[in-house]
Length: 284
Ligand SMILES: Nc1ncnc2c1ncn2[C@@H]1O[C@H](COP(=O)(O)OP(=O)(O)OP(=O)(O)O)[C@@H](O)[C@H]1O
Ligand SMILES: [Mg+2]
Image (cartoon, rainbow, N blue to C red; front, side):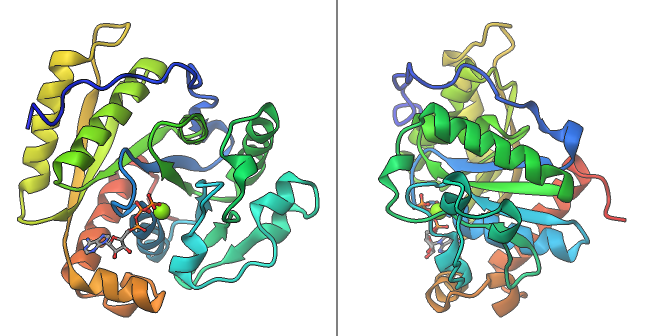
């Protein structure tokens, strides 16, 4: 595996450090970025279903589609928003009118798709994004940012708004190599001292912990931060490969509503439990 995880080049134009160093904790919600190195590994599936599981536990949850240019949270949730973040950014709509209710009982802020203007991080996008997060944070206990994949400046900026980062990776070498690259950039440029991992589409129980351990070894060898402390990976859980997931996506339904007892849904519920006990105050 070490070969697959040889050190990648780092991007030079990403933002230097978190825009909100402690998320928006001081003003409300815990902000968790759900991100990945490689695309298509399950970020949107995890974001939407984790939101439903946390809502069920009594948390006030918002999912923000932070994949500004190629959003598809609306597709997974079968929503047809009339107003999107794009309308808020351009001043055509009020923020409160863009927040809509998803089937799992949580709130969502959806972005538009095919928005080429959001493929680059301009000062306007940066400010608008920051303003939206700061305005919305007091209303929720937790905000999940469903980010784009990779290490573009827009993705890194959206991650910088979060106090916690949850990397979704699959056991495939390509996914792990890209996860390594993303973690390295987060450690070097955002000075992240820890990053949380969830291994999706795991083949066997225990695989994710072993994979996280191997990734940690490569990071310890090749990545040292300014403080010399390196970056610590925290394994949050595994989600098994489960045919019910594809089925739910094809029907545009939440897995947690469609087949709550299937192995992947149970794993998401466990992940929500772990996130609540480690990162959130118990719901009132
Ligand atoms: N645990 C799983 N078991 C089986 N299939 C899965 C699982 N997780 C995800 N998938 C499949 O992977 C597909 C892609 O998932 P998803 O859209 O959530 O990925 P993504 O990381 O958000 O992609 P992108 O980078 O394009 O935003 C899903 O539509 C589903 O078919
Ligand atoms: Mg996605």
